[in-house]
Length: 172
Ligand SMILES: Cc1cc2nc3c(=O)[nH]c(=O)nc-3n(C[C@H](O)[C@H](O)[C@H](O)COP(=O)(O)O)c2cc1C
Image (cartoon, rainbow, N blue to C red; front, side):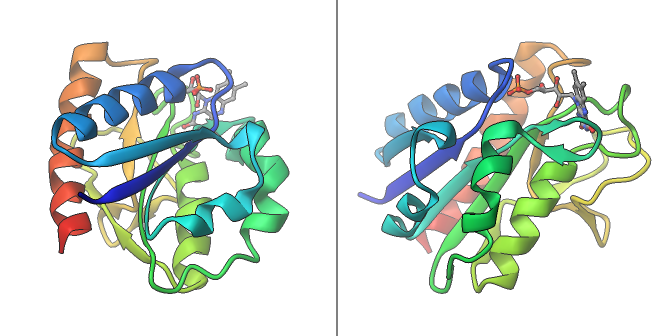
């Protein structure tokens, strides 16, 4: 059984709700998932896992969610060599089309720079934004969930597609 550490931050609870859905789905598929609110722990906890899921919404026009923002000075010093990381975040593509999911991009790029392998890239076709730090070569560096403009069922469908993809990568 593969063990996954899922780390999220959430201000208005959308990312929290998505994280709990993901934990339930993965556990049904026989993964063991430990879930942490990044606001409650030290970021070095991330290093206890080789398989990591990180959830961070974008706030304040292109910024990390507050709790992630507080741990970022420590996060950016961590050595992620040998770790697989799947990133996701909530955002609002209509309200913030020039900064959609920037926070996911900020965290994912730092993870990769510090030696981690990024999994769970997601196609951009389902979205209508203009600019994002999270976009690279026509792909998003993680899953974007837009509860501001899509219904919960749509977001659940996206999560299931993405989880099926990352489960394969965590197993390889
Ligand atoms: C003041 C404010 C600024 C925001 N800035 C962005 C942004 O720059 N990019 C983006 O994609 N979403 C932005 N959002 C949308 C949030 O990311 C979105 O509502 C998300 O679902 C919140 O997640 P949470 O409930 O987990 O905190 C912003 C929302 C507010 C209220």
